[in-house]
Image (cartoon, rainbow, N blue to C red; front, side, top):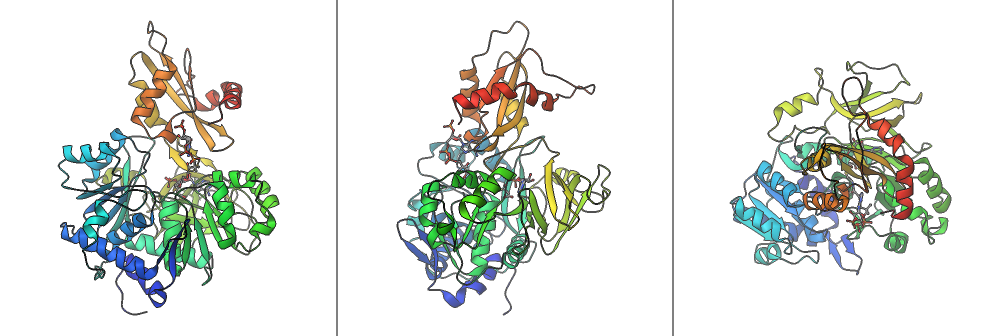
Length: 515
Ligand code: MLC
Ligand code: AMP
């Protein structure tokens, strides 16, 4: 290959340049953006960023609806050497306030309807605030329209930052996960090889593009392959079934597969030409895997990853698959299953997944002490996921050591919710636990105790306070009051006991209001 820099966009460009006329993004209404269009649009955005004074390493925070222009913005940041910082559109003002203070972006791009974001930026003295709406309109487009459609992509080294994605944790504030150009390119190349991308592949893209799955796994592998995507603004089972005949690849969280498996139009004939259905971000239940296979004639292929590492393992295309088996470490990833002393457990026993590799992040943004906590003395990253290894080397995820709920593919940290509840007047303490949910896999149940003598708490008011402070998917689906919380001898709340105690009430609640 010609002498290209480590800039991820240069690596993509080397792959797609021979076929600039090829469609990259095809929208549901038939609008097509070719690779030539992508090259020009990303150049205009990159020129605008440079004109605004963006220098390599500056953060560009983006909270916008999914659109082709949002994809171009990500690529423009790569081209300009800026650090792309995507934010979930569900984040509320308090959450955004923290991210903007912590990351200190030089430019913020938000939805024109988001008055909160504009106000927040003003209060923080962020000079450059642009807009982009779901239809691809806004000041970003207006102000870049006169910019040249060519741009010399900035050369960069492997350890230069490409993106920061925030990840909450079991303690403390969310941490900015710093990902380098090499982290992203090595991971995309590994997946591209593992999933044997072909020149005729078409990805049906329905995931959000502010998290690793829809952004890096889906987009970067497609760009590595220089092929096209059918681009849906959000997951909708009807729309997926309608467009499957034009696709060869689909990627989703288990909730997507659960919804598709019960769709009346899903048949083996409809899926006959599909090359791969790939699942990740959350545990895939055996029931979903089996029902989906029966209805579609295809076995879902699982892969496992996380924000800090991109993808870590994947099942093999030509080996048997089963639910919960996330396959083998990707090329370049070293994986071990360790005990609490960070020593390998005997083969077949359960322990924590610990990893090394080029995919591994460059640390938490301005939190070196937090970074150090998550690594072992011999340089392995501690994922907090529990697994065992089968005799054939396949990794089976069996649980999580971290107190985290995965709901519809989104991570929800109980601590974050408990802190909001505990701050409410009259509350003594609270515990949020993950309960089985037929659609989202898991969802939150909050149990609250009151200070002695405090008046009974209005559950609707608790819900309203939570909705005010937190993204909607984090809101517990059920909130109950209790006399006390069970504790072990160390004084730690026994969340397992709570799950058992409230199981029948939870099931009854779901019967009444499943969402
Ligand atoms: C929506 N709701 C959820 C939810 N999504 N509740 C719990 N968990 C979720 N994930 C709630 C809303 O709060 C709302 O409630 C109601 O459901 C309807 O909202 P909606 O937006 O209309 O729902 P829907 O469009 O059906 O969205 C569900 C979904 C979506 C599953 C399609 O959540 C989704 O696309 N999830 C994918 C997440 C993802 O990309 N994860 C990858 C992370 S990367 P109310 O009460 O407010 O009306 C990662 C690494 C890796 O983990 O390995 O990939
Ligand atoms: P995130 O922090 O959003 O990147 O989420 C990463 C977490 O999602 C991992 O640490 C796992 O707990 C979980 N996860 C990702 N893929 C899978 C999978 N295939 N099976 C089970 N859990 C998964």
